[in-house]
Amino acid sequence: MITLLSWGGLQAQPVLSGTTTMPLGEQVGIIRVAATSIDNQGAAGSNITWDFSDMQAIGSQTASFLAPDATPFAGNFGNANVAVSYQSGLQMGSAMVSYEFFSSLASGLIRNGLATAQNVQVSYSDPQNTLTFPFTYGTTQTDNFAATFATAGQSVEESGTISVTGDAYGNLLLPNASINGVLRVRILQEYTDVVNGIELEFSVETYAWFHPELAYPLLTISTENVVGSPTSVRNVHYAQFVPSTSIGDIYPNFSFVSAPNPATDQSNIRFYMPQNAPIQIAVYNAIGQKVTQLLDETLNIGNHELPLSVADYPTGIYFVQLSLNGLTETRRLVVAR
Image (cartoon, rainbow, N blue to C red; front, side, top):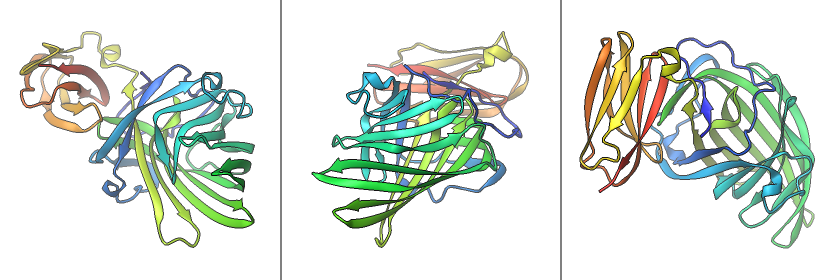
């Protein structure tokens, strides 16, 4: 499980740097969202709070960070040192992507290419310089990229530019978590594909929210347009993360359990408040949808117990999330009958 740090209040400007990496061997849940449930990407600027907590999930899967040699395409993507493998394929524009290949370096993040579910391999002869470190609010960069690849028996010559701007930072509210100190990056890819002498011009605008610990976006809102076409393709997905700094790290006497677990009809949420403070407790299902808000009030120091009826919950895995003073902890709860 990948972990991230979460704090409340006004944030210093987050900086993506040499410690912003893709951790080999880790996995993360990816939730696909109905694009119609997002009106827009929200405001640009400093200390913004983006509330996407009501996004409608329409699917989930696992993304894994692998060595490129662990994929079927070892050696086909230049100097890539990390591959992101999508268990069920991830829709990116009009393509269903099975693998992305990156060079995750102390100097930045370079995208070397991708492989689709139809086994189309786009390996960049001139890779996309996605992020140059340090990267923060107000940073801008532009890079050229190019590739030659085959699809449906046709050779494609692709060339274009990628422009990247850190246009905002602040706090990101997702259906299953509140993650603070994130940087929003606007990515504009403008490129041309030449197939049998015919030119197709594309424009892809992406808003991606990053945390300084991970070179993978927490939330992505992307719109692909083909010049001359009246329609566009919009994709939205977010990643599930668990805060790395636990409440117990700050308050050693803090405790938080759900029992019985597995539960059939009822589980009891027991926790110790280390101080008088506002507290929130909510339950989420396996794809990040909020099932119920159990508690949102100020409690006094001491032991507390809260009953949770699961009699009407379908059998499966749930997550009980407790938030205290800007820190969040999550406990896994199994409902079984």
